[in-house]
Length: 68
Image (cartoon, rainbow, N blue to C red; front, top):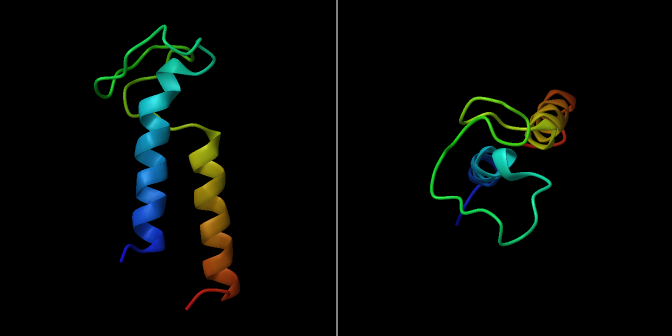
């Protein structure tokens, strides 16, 4: 069974794969690995605010003691 950490890693990797293609029409691109300098002109592997907000939320939950 996976863990929350596994889910967050999956989210971050998926986000980094998708950042170069954000706002493009479906079917107009092919993602075959980490690439950079797409929609937002960021280096390969850059994640978006989605991952940043998820990490901040997880950190807050941990600090407040809501998770064992």
